[in-house]
Image (spheres, rainbow, N blue to C red):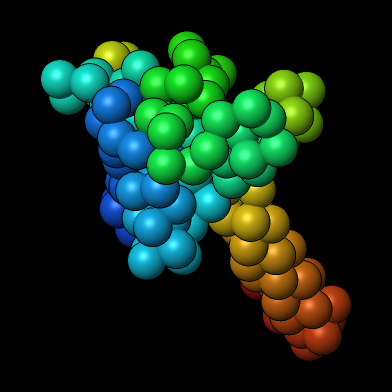
Length: 148
């Protein structure tokens, strides 16, 4: 399975905010859409990622949520995946860079965001399918095996 398959399973919704968007608005968007990250977009181009981790760090810092903007706390130039990357490559990148949300770009075009939860669901689905196929193979009539 590749990232493109995961994006097809989860749908193509991309939630975003402008760099000047308030942190209060960012939190409201995340809550409204039940997501843990927002892509920070400027003129149709991704310039950063904002996750609940950055929001919590900001709340623990000097400023208040009312004063801060997305640009103040976002991750600039986030690591990205590509649609053809495999699940194993995806897990390695996410684990190595300690990210729970990975933007996916096809060239310069943002095509989606994959979460660690999305990866877990895809692995479970893939493993379940493999188990069903193996079970069918094991339970097949031995006389039928030579016919394939």
